[in-house]
Picture 1 (cartoon, rainbow, N blue to C red):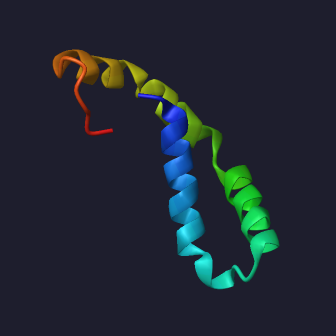
Picture 2: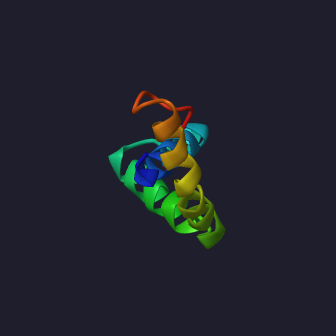
Length: 68
């Protein structure tokens, strides 16, 4: 339900895709900042706009896990 979980997942996936260029802890933090700052406003807007559908999915499934 919480859209921040989608942000974390996207960040983690992109970090994994760039793992070849990461050599140490400092690189991890630098890449993390770079990836986060490259997320577009549209990305966050789409997550926000998906909230009504997410809420409806939870209602339809009586509080059980959703596809999100």
